[in-house]
Image (cartoon, rainbow, N blue to C red; front, side, top):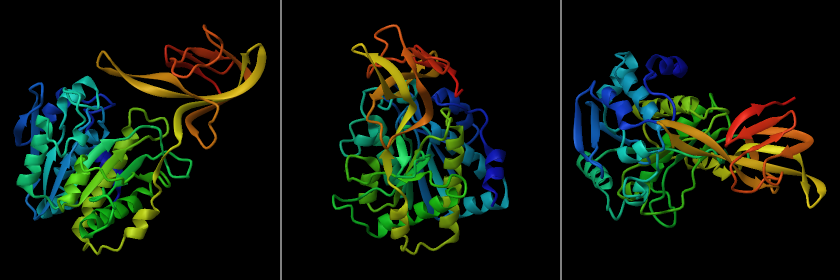
Length: 384
């Protein structure tokens, strides 16, 4: 199967970038029979879509965290594929039933926050069920009795795929179901599908797939559903070089969704892929957005050379996400990487304060004939 061609044929062009709200997706939802299963804290509708008539039941939900929109885009790409009327899509619709919640946290999506309108992280509310969105998710799960759950998220740019020196563009997890992080038949089923998706993605982004930490937390929805004997897979859309709109990451999530479903459709689950799963490198916090090396500063009337790192904060401004750089670390950057790296070759750092970077400050500086930031925005970047 040519995944690249299939993706390009089914990409939902009306969705782009990081800021995806209910307003962006409602007209896409309305193309299909839908159900309003309830409302958010602020009264926004939460929609369910149902496709297929097969015996294998897959439950997917996206934007549990409102500022994690990449998988929502990929989910609509996948919906387009399901309705492409091809041999492959028709076979999947015949053999699977999908219940999809494209946006579980519409209030958080509007505000571009991780939490819901009550400032509660829904992915820590699986036991308390204190929020209407959490209750709805559990009610749909209980009614549907799925064979697999797909928990769709984004992860920050800080993660690398183990010691590869490459970003974790996609990460997976078969969540633990107990404190011992044991592997039973249920968890093994999730592991086997992850191994298949990893093997497919390695053809597109070799050494850029990570395995998320599996520390057990029963308050997390994936751990809860796994403990309730339903194989559950966490998807994390991460960073691809220069792709802050996460359009490339979106493609790889689509490929993972499609290839994983195909694997379930075409193979018996044999529960012998644990070692291959553990071979997927675990995520490590090893990246900053921007690393500046060999920068000359004046410190206590002495010249010295330093390295420092910048990290972007995502700021919602007039319905647009602004990437605002802040100084995150000075020196102590051994074993860290930058998505962008600049070697100043001992040229001077200048700003309007003390002519030295300060951790936490917004990036307002220049380096001679090199880079320049203003109010956190990159305005010049030269490797010359």
